[in-house]
Image 1 (cartoon, rainbow, N blue to C red):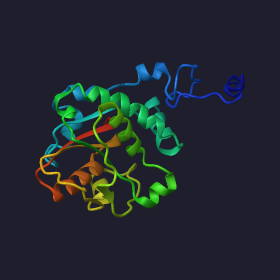
Image 2 (image 1 turned 90 degrees about the horizontal axis):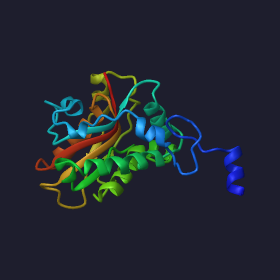
Image 3 (image 1 turned 30 degrees about the vertical axis):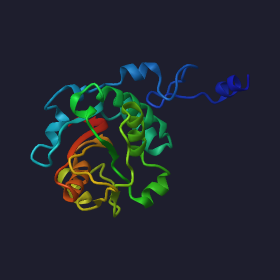
Length: 228
């Protein structure tokens, strides 16, 4: 009775459409879970996400779960994840997407999942790293271990949201360091983040990783792909 009363006055809302969740739903309603625009990039070799990195860094595969458009339910979901203290949104999407990626030959062979890190100061202000929670969900969905203390952001940078491709690269160049706690030669890393736009941040992370060890493989997965 108490639960029903609380639900009446403080209903749980879907983080994507903001409609009231039914009793059996959690975090994201069934309608959004089915209806959010999926890219299916992981099933397409040479997809749009992979093409972003051609001539920039070696990438085994790259994929994003959803298409991102301004004013969309995907944007609202990411806003709730990133700014409204809803890290479970990243974990739910990550777990589902991880299970999908296991169906592919390349992603299924990853040895470690590595989230793009926040600067410690920024993470303290926000309380969590949204990419890390996406990675945690992917770890549950795939069984692949998640490492959060090997790739570090060594200095803070301004928000990348309104910058062009070149400015984004300038903003993140040389801000990451990679210091794994074991031998990684020949290992395959799945580098994950929330949104893929220009790829500047993910490229900078990969550059730091390749700088430490050339003989590794890197794949990339994000929650959303920003169409241009």
